[in-house]
Length: 286
Figure 1 (tube, rainbow, N blue to C red):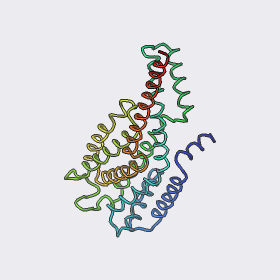
Figure 2 (figure 1 turned 60 degrees about the vertical axis):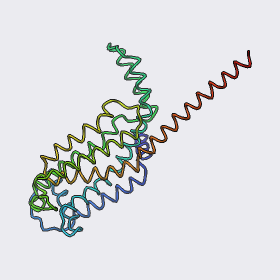
Figure 3 (figure 1 turned 30 degrees about the vertical axis):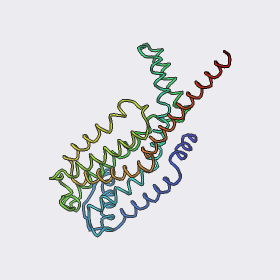
């Protein structure tokens, strides 16, 4: 357990953990600010909804009671809150990309074999590769999983809080879907850009589903945003726009591809040098 904890801290980085702690303090502080909302929330889930609603209202007060900017500001705080998970996930994805060729060799080794012993051996060898490389194959799912309860709580907060439900932001009524589909389009666009950048930064040795995600996920976001309240679509736009900037700094696909080309060129030059040396050696023998 201690080793896993240290591995998480090492991959996430102390800076992201500090930023996350400050974001949590800010979210709690905004949630404790007094506001005019008199909605009564019942039960444990109601308490979570109330906390989200009060935090958004607190951030909104900071922006002159603009609930749209309040949601955007709250979204940025949430992104800073989960920053260690994002950094850890990014680091694990890079490590995963490095061991993918080794995993593929193991899969090819047992290709066509469906008996229990072969499956057990394949799983054991795959686990050994992950363990030796310090890779958690499920780490990339953490940011997605952690955002599901956030989306649920945000949806409940907007649906249950009249102040937010009837709030407006430019052409939007936050409790209703975008009538012009501008937010769904932006949400899908930023989702595609962030997904493509993440995939491009990991190189060519990736599973097929990973390469397909940048083209599938945006459609899911687009059609979901068409049905959901504008407040939720605004969250998706803000969170994925933030993700684009974050991916650029944490992964930078352009730099990663340049480094990959340099590594390939270095390997090509090395093979040419070996071939040249062997030819010279043969000539001397003659």
